Length: 71
Ligand SMILES: [Zn+2]
Image (cartoon, rainbow, N blue to C red; front, side, top):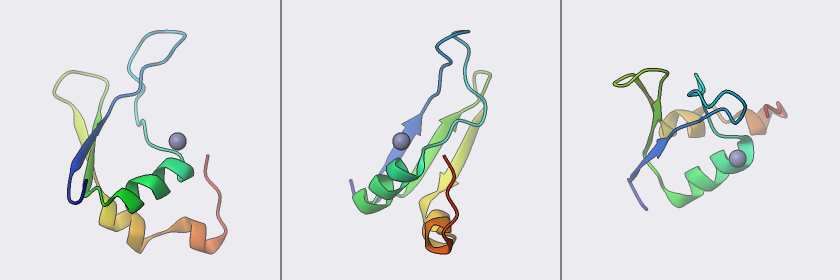
């Protein structure tokens, strides 16, 4: 998985609509970093709307090192 791209889509169970701003939890972040994934592409609310997350930014700005928990 080194230097691979992961695609992420969040769909709300109650409304069946796409979740805006979907992202991974801290545990998944660590697994993504450890897997060597380079980039995550998150689907937005409409077709063709995507957000790209550079995993190097997660490594550089690792909030776990500061004791901040985000879940
Ligand atoms: Zn997770």
